[in-house]
Image (cartoon, rainbow over all chains, first blue to last red):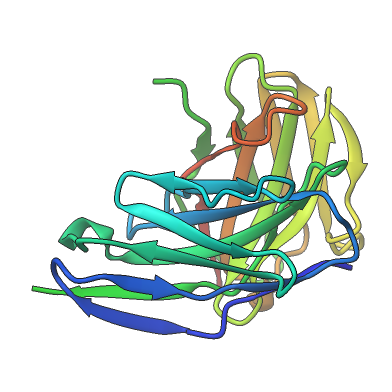
Length: 114
Length: 114
């Protein structure tokens, strides 16, 4: 079974600085999808960024980018120019290509210090 | 904007009572998921449906939990009898089949069983 591990329960960063959230996963599949979701205090799960395993290029979405290392099974999220609105729980998630369900990590709580 | 609607947003009940949580998926979405979020276990998949048929409910305690889709606009998750260990946030998510990035989450039902 696939597993997703986020080793940082909490992280904090100064506003306008850059922060990287770590995620590793375990799978025997060669083709799959990886995601980062943001969960603010409102509880709404918001998709931040996604990566397809067969693509070498790291995904980027404005201030959010990933460092996808397929051989190391690592998928970290970098947030540049951190803003107060980035404060939330961040979840890394995995989905096999042929599957429907998402497997989530335990989450990292990100605090932005003004 | 289309969104997944969950009711109630909060529920406090006493041990032994029946609890019903409802979800209205986005119109046209034919895949529906139920997730449970706790501090200890993170986000766990309870069940999911495609075209109203249950595809996987292996994550759900069968003796007390049941999930159904009476029609395409309503998914329900019932707990009977409820126990304090069921206290959690229950999320519903919906998406069109095969479109990985188009999974939308509701805001969840926060359940407290006293």
